[in-house]
Amino acid sequence: MILALDIGNTNIVIGCCTDDKILFTERISTNQSATEFEYAMIIKNILEIYDIKPDQITGAIISCVVPSLKNILKNAIEKSVAQEALIVGPGIKTGVKIACGNPAQLGADLVVDTAAGINCYGAPIIIVDMGTATTISAVGEDGSYLGTVIMPGVMISLNSLVGGTAQLPKISLEKPDTVIGTNTVDCMKSGIMYGTASNIDGMIDKIREEMGVNARVIATGGLAPSIIPLCKHEITIDDELLLKGLMIIYKKNK
Image 1 (cartoon, one colour):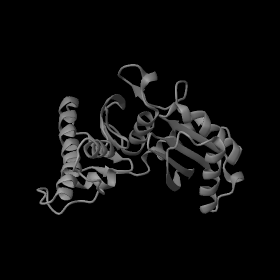
Image 2: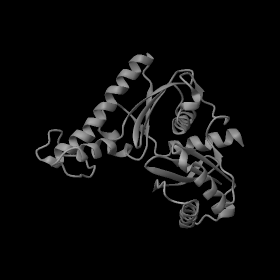
Image 3: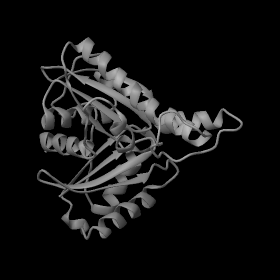
Image 4: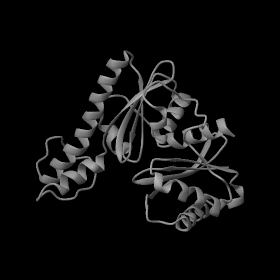
């Protein structure tokens, strides 16, 4: 059984995998002030909830876009399950051919998404990952990673809107009944939710046009279930895409 962690700016996704099956997925808040002992206790408690004993874990893998937490979580895994975690980065076999820029500068989460997308859905493919930032990655017909669009994430946009105005309130992300809002809260919900969905639809059109192919679109990330159903394009939501990618990369290296 493999323990897999994806460390993002807002959340850390934790899951356990065996063979090709994801046993569970949980999200905890990213806390750069937490110690390795505190994270070890969190990991231990999550495993206990799912009745998984530490000695059942035979390996671990981490992808991380928060450099200050990389070693803290690596040590936390060693404390909680006595396994040395594989960290996605330079020198790790991923099976992803990067056809743009400097591969060393590419975020680990984008590499993991791409590995899973190619293996699970084939190529060409467009991958929308809705986390702290919204990223839209393009993978060519030969499986090459072509590049990514990076946009402000839904919560960054919403928090900026609320923080930069005097009278707009904090709101929850619930679909409004109509696109044309008739009160302040619904106006904001429409702008954030339908606005983001329309943005994604437009970027998909432009990326497909640039690629010259009608690539399939996959979406993942914590906010995808709230926004993607509002898009006009046919988009498959895969909440487990990152964990699938981590398992694929772990197998290539172990």
